[in-house]
Image 1 (spheres, rainbow, N blue to C red):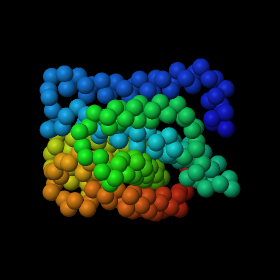
Image 2 (cartoon, rainbow, N blue to C red):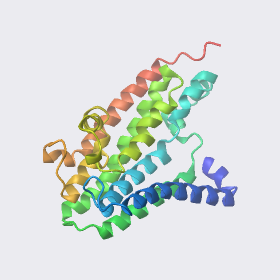
Image 3 (spheres, rainbow, N blue to C red):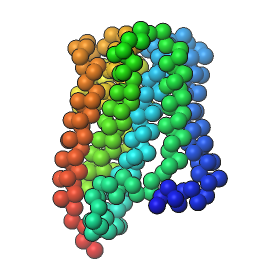
Length: 254
């Protein structure tokens, strides 16, 4: 329904999709401006940072396209419209994910994918079968991890009711964080996004293996391949949180 509604105004859709593409491109333009003054950023070349940027943007864009509306749960809880979702014979999470489905977000995915493709052509790495396979696995696992964070943030809003910006700080803020090398940040922050909110598994750890870089935390090498497992675990935890939040919902009381 939302796709048909969007395509009813095709010129508007094209303009908004191009706008999303351009807005995402400005982030990479800022990175390129940095490299006009330096040769490396945290010890990483432009192509390597572009690889981080591309994997982070594409993964977040895919999760945002499919699950980008849990931040509206707080509003639904406050105005009572969550009750409407509960009486329909469709899982509530599916309805929340599909609510106001924004096909224009494909512009963000396209922009991140183009930067990723450019970086793959520029990188001077040993493209073994493992490294080649790790790229799509990283994108899919990263999208799943971001999706789990979206879901967990939505579940939190059943109690907080007005925590959309808190959720956004971990999703969109996390996506921006992962566009830059981990060597730029304090060790405590890197540990936090590895062991508490496991965003480092979106692209930092697999990228370190592909790029042949040392882990700033000195973690075992097998963790570079743990993205799919971490994605399953985070999705499981997010599912439990969502179920608990939904069961604890008591409507507005008005």
